[in-house]
Image (tube, rainbow, N blue to C red):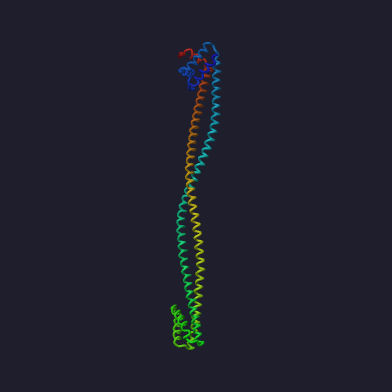
Length: 362
């Protein structure tokens, strides 16, 4: 059979490029210039010379056209499937890129805000540390002041007690003199009391000391009464003064209790604040380090996703270009087949005339 070799030669002819403005003889002449086209025309010429049916060639050309159309449908289906898959891959990559970009923005903001917070915490912890030192210094100073006040009160209260004891002793001595006891019997006690009163150097006792000195030289009832009245007045003043000192001591003690409480509460607050800040500083540093590391990872992930997207886009572009080129080639091949069919069916006379005069190409 001549069908198989003719089909092979017609496939070669299908690659020839013609234009619709060319005449049948021009089309055949163009095909004749190609070695494969020349072979096809030789077969056609043989067909005509032997009286073989032209219908076989038409069947072969129809088969070629059907095969080309079938190949195009398959290519269209593959192209459509590849396009859907590509669009899904692109959408996933774009979504992944958007995610990594948002993560980079979030991590950058976290790093920057935490760095700012770290700086503020480090400044504040220095201030709080200074405040703690000031608080402790104030507590020490105020505590020393309060201790001094208390010691002063203790000393003055003891002095008042001694002075009141001296006044009471003097009153007893004067009362004994008033009762008729001889001065000589009370002289030793008298001199001790007098010396004790003189040691105090208190202006309050000056009139009393003078009166007692006079009484030592001359004992009379009038002087005794006067001295007893003076002793009672002095003792009353000492009692009032001691009470005033005690009230001052109690007021100062109460004030110190309140003030020390405030200082201790402030100290506790400052120490807790410092501990919180120091812990925050540690956490801030950890957060910054983790954010920097995560930022580096996300940047790498983003670069990988962008590279993958670029690769997919290049692959899609190549596939699209290949699909378009193959589609264009099939369209051209179908056009050649149609031109051959037109020449062989509608214009056989022109084909026969050309084949009769053509030169064989070997």
